[in-house]
Image (cartoon, rainbow, N blue to C red; front, side):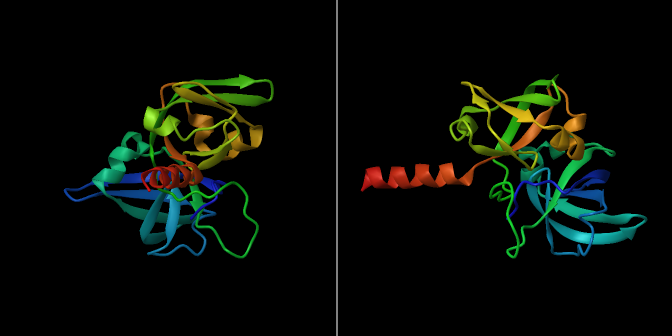
Length: 203
């Protein structure tokens, strides 16, 4: 479980496809502290298991084995060596929780259709499929590439978010452009409510 508060951006160091999986290596510093094989890490909002942690100068090289299902469902399929990725370690149960509950299970991809500066802030608009848009609500929470954000406006096929300078500076959004794909995880509360209502109607 995660909160959507990105701790740092890591950098993709290697991508090694094989018949069974894709080995992705990411260089990290802050999130590398104490990280070992078997630990969970949210990479662009996707919960991945560290299979190897190799000490490097100023951090570690964290390696993950991605199933082809994960590869196709996330924007890792567009990643290249040198790409920035958002990183967050698993939620601790002994402290304050910022952001919102993020499971690390990506629902699908969205496409950036507007990304521009507005005064000191930025406006981000993302187009998403109907099966995702049904869970997007005004003032609700959504994770975009693992970043916990608040929905500022909702249209039929897209939603808009305001990005403050801090979020712009500490996440990989600073390198995004119109046309880029982003990983989306909608708020889990809406999914449970929909399930409960459907069950109640059947009973």
